[in-house]
Image 1 (cartoon, rainbow, N blue to C red):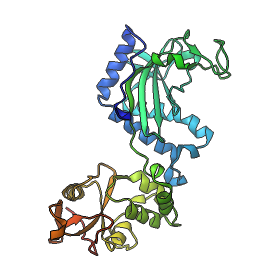
Image 2: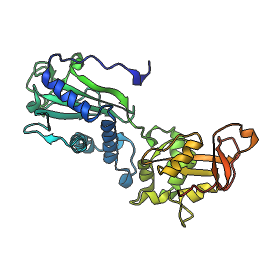
Image 3: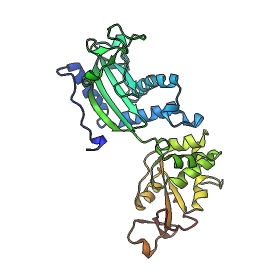
Image 4: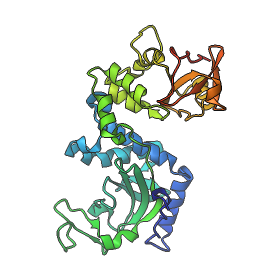
Length: 323
């Protein structure tokens, strides 16, 4: 069994009609969890603010920024699902007050006094593990505890938390699902350094697509490396010959984007196919008998195939079709 196949722990609460109602509504809004996953990825990227800071590691955030993460998750989920604000808690879901709690530490939520005995939407995401979970918790005041004390008066901030013995109180809706990978964070250190080493944003973006072949690259990675407002210009194929596409074409590399024509090319080459907001670069050569029956695409009037690092390329690579 792989990590992502881990079974969802049994819910801790039974016969709780309000919990059932909230759970059912969330599943109606997001049956497969894809919307939650996207909001969490975008919120972490929003905090990292790579365009202005060049950061891509949660550990590089300031303490105040990490504290602010919970507020951003709460607001971004409210907007994504068009939820109503509660009277006393964060959300009103099907007439039921629900508080939203986020932690980057699994089971690390801090429950405020006003949420005791109420329903909490508990959210966890870890960029280093590329995992996230969302569940519901009835914040039972008799089963919550405080950090560093056995009293029920709360910690210095007046907040409560779960003990290890009471982790089972969480009714998971999505458990340890895959979070879209933070590419720069998970690169091998030497490769990461080679991409980050150039002093200019353009050269860093060029090195990214030179090194990361046949792998989906989110545009947020380009934004972080480019460090400019119009970061997409670093990839664009135009009269500026320093852009990634014209530079790498001279090295036998093409960069496909998320337009329909580019996706067709990527699929014909055997993929992967870039999704919305993604790029995939390929090293290519004109199809030859020794390439066998590998997938090919016709460009510039000739068939082309994707090749590996140790295979010869043809230079320049062909231009990608505009339509």
